[in-house]
Length: 75
Image (cartoon, rainbow, N blue to C red):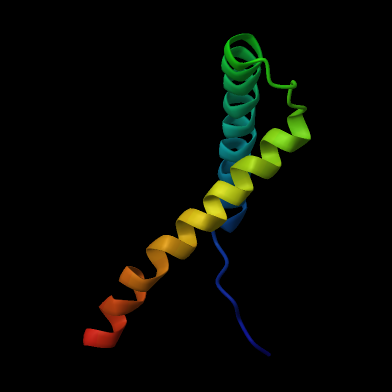
């Protein structure tokens, strides 16, 4: 039988979800405050704010991926 040590992963997942929700609230509020009032853009719903945040995280991860992988290539 295999023993897996998975201590503390539940807390990490919960903290990541909280960070995504708080970031989504920040994106939602900032878009609806800035873009709607200043630039006459349509309002954003919360699910679109979460989608924008996840897209930004994905793009940022892809941009940072080559430098992350170069650490392992040089070793």
